[in-house]
Length: 496
Image (cartoon, rainbow, N blue to C red; front, side, top):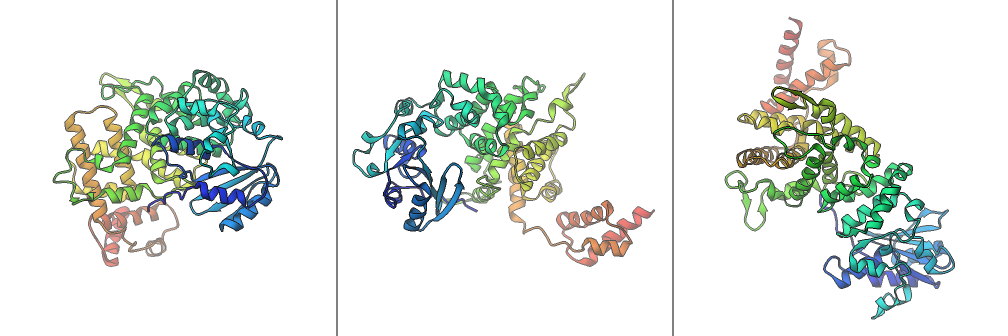
């Protein structure tokens, strides 16, 4: 499923929304910032921002209701106490708030960062010289030109501690830097993030995982004390040596794996590297035969505005968190026996703490628990049956697992032969997965099994059903008679 492109809030649309109510109105915050960036560079296109904030010197609720009628949108109450309302449009929205203070300058000084603390009178949105009318009491234009994220006021982080993490998110999303004083402010106030709801932290953290320089910004978040508040499990990875197969400690390796994973997600053709040849069929003019299928899977909605790819990134960051507790050393070197299984449990707990949905938590656990399987399988010649078993056990989640395994391997700078082996294995899995029909319908159900073998509900019923499922996948049985013959034999063996 392809995620639709945001419709965007054009200057004309915003002028219409503001003109629906005859009060003083200003467009403020990110829309102004993005319009300035779009008009002066190729980073963004003016009018592509999917949301905008209108500040009303008057009744914001009445203004939003009139704008909703005029634009054919939906009126939404966001926060009555703060007098905040929304007009929802296809792929975009406009928020209406009442001015804080008697003048717009006072309102802007209470915002998070200088580059978000600029406003344009609604009456000048379509003016040819609109830039000359921007209110900028905190120096946002200067910081925008310098590509710097700086708080709008001296107490910005104390007023809302989430801004410490948002500073990293803004830098990551825009490709900006944090000034030295901003970094000091984030570090001094990072502990206050413990007061912030997990849902708000989650919604700032996931955009950081999507950024091109994700390793840089996660390293900064750790250095400034934010990671111990966001995902405290990662702290134990610092300076954890991993043995001869790794050049980095567990934390830096995890950052490198996420960086490489983002590259793989951006271009699934990289999964094949130079070895696509006879393994990865191509279609003229459309690249890899599998690339569209992979992109479709990765773009599947997860929950909120998160996608399947976002959950994979989160799992990648946490894929080694089971290592500190499973560390051992002997004459053969360093070992982490069972770290994937323990890591799956720990990663699932971290996902729950971040208030991910039940399905997302399950996905994180499955990916982390199984991330070593592709690497272990390729140590010996891989049979088609082993590949079918991996798919049977993990479903189409094996795509995520293979992507993580490949990023994990590449982060350790493997030999060319090992990298080639892993890439070819990944392509074989994809070929098997995408060539097969949907998972077969069960040939027998639990009630039938319990009745036939006089069983009560319990693990034995599940084991017998699993025998049939594996036989369907691996051996291609397709009739109830075959299923019962198989189960009868299993039942006899259990009784012997």
